[in-house]
Length: 353
Image (tube, rainbow, N blue to C red; front, side, top):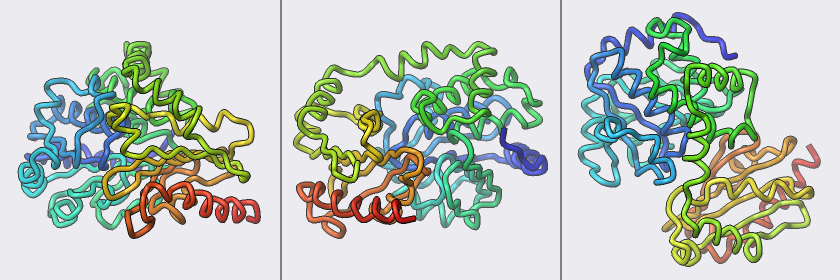
């Protein structure tokens, strides 16, 4: 279980009590952990403090996790891609900013400049490597933990408002935190620690319905997701001699199957079920860049591969990145060639280490 400096917990509570305008921010392309921690923080502030609170996103969360956003929370969400001025104004006028599930402001894309220039009291709560602590007034950074949602759970439970008891959390926050943790561990398949199981047990004991969460997360997709998966497994997955599996999804394929944000969730993990696959990559064309997801077995660093070859980073066995067109690569049609060249170099370096 993570340990915290009690003075930091008390300071967080004191700052929230002083706040009049609080903004919660998370990384661009928000996933389940980003939204789980953000909506839980929103609920906690609404319950215990008098601050006006907004969640400011760079872009809209995927429809696959829309179930976790209540109408009350939705009314307090501002999105840069939908109303850039309103989103940036909220950041500029905030006296407190809570940053969740990212380690540096560049991970917020178009919000970066406004966040960096803000004079607000800034709090970072994150589980990624290399946090930019100098950009924040108060930092909670733990890497040996499943998710930002789990980290936030332990922090909120330790506040004077909750007094160390899970049942004192707002119930909506408890559900959001369970959902966020479940998505980031791929339903306990990776990055699961004793503290993670303790969190799940405590939340279930206060009435959080894990079966309902799992049904909403994994049994509500459209049929095209499954049809695309069949196409991937039959025609689009390549496994190299180095034991690297990769899948490249161009815009034509994504459009053909009418794929929405979140529909490919979990695809990158599937090749790791093959005994000779050490690392798996999923690449998706997205305008003038290619988004990259990387997963690996223990002993192979997805984080290092992403940092060295895909302009990204993350966790030891789960990382993300991107390739910029044309700076890094001519186009999506060259993706396979790029992957095979760079992962060959990387795997050989890992074997020699």
